Amino acid sequence: MIFISDLGAAFGAARRHRNLGANLAVRLPRDAAQRAGFRNGTPVEVEARRGEVVIRSVQPRYTLSELLEGATPEAMRDAFTWGEDVGREAVE
Image (cartoon, rainbow, N blue to C red; front, side):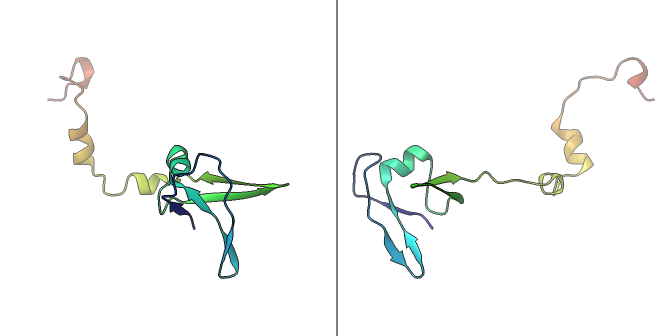
């Protein structure tokens, strides 16, 4: 869970953590979150390294079926303008 605050602190300013249930929570200053492209609800990946925690936004991954959901042959035909049929493309 990401909390974005309006405290106006400089990017990279230290923040204290606090407990949120059994987990720790850290507030990100609004300007730092905006520079990173984070908003409330942004899915993130958290990686723990020696002495630091790295938070990255996670790009969604779609399957081909999800990308083509709702696509019909008629819609695909109307989506592209190839010009007039020429040569052996022409069907009578």
